[in-house]
Image (cartoon, rainbow, N blue to C red; front, side):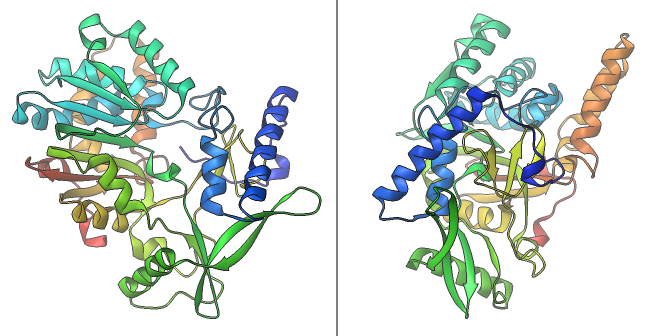
Length: 400
């Protein structure tokens, strides 16, 4: 969940151990810049800052999610989010029959998987396998420990941790919550009508600096596609993010899904809103101890780097991968259309006043416009299955 923005120089001080960890990662990134001839694309810097083995933000052992971390995701608030997602996917899994898999990208602390599996069991829609693709060894260990402790053996035994996307055809559902925003993204800028790509260099004192270099053919074509689709060129000096690799990523994670659905939840905009003239410095945001700021070079390895999602680009990528767009709507609409009213009725029967209050607060954060309700959106794709009913409320497809 994104917090209000603030200057990087007003952020809390890390511990000496954490600062030393960040210094080691910064030194490693400097060595990679040197090996690359003195400059790397910003997307490569973001990849190293987030995923360098043992050092990157998602690869090291610091706590990322929840009140003690840097940000809160929907599954960390409670079980309602996972229960509603399970409610939406249960008819698909039951309809497919036979051997099925629930493929979760990322997985956070494992809270979503635990709640989803319990709800799917209640709905008689358990998949044969529950796969989790987690690049962080530390998070994988935490997920395994949480699920082993909180699931019956019969449910835990369905869980498998993958090192990469499936390599053979499969049937089932793919789910990704706040994954797309963490994909290493190129940043571009328009100079004299031409497309340049933001790179990172090291100055004489060892600090990271951003410089612009002519874009390669792939990035250039992606930016020109945005301009054609929006019907106007981007203005001089306009800087933002774009994911020309998104179609290839979607094909990699979901291309072998023969029958089933893909469901994505993230924060972002349709293309025309993403590249508004006034949004001329992009959407990049850094999260550190529940503060949001705009300096990606502050304490590398100790902060999350994210960019909002272009949902039009996601729709194009899914369709080009051979799927049909099932729907697109705000998180509040999706939850309301997929079991939230039943959850509310159950909550009202709870005798414990404090627990009932906590559930109500959870639902408010998930659904109110000023919280997650409209800031986050769901997008679904289908192939050999019908998932359109899950988007019966609040369809936003006209905005794509």
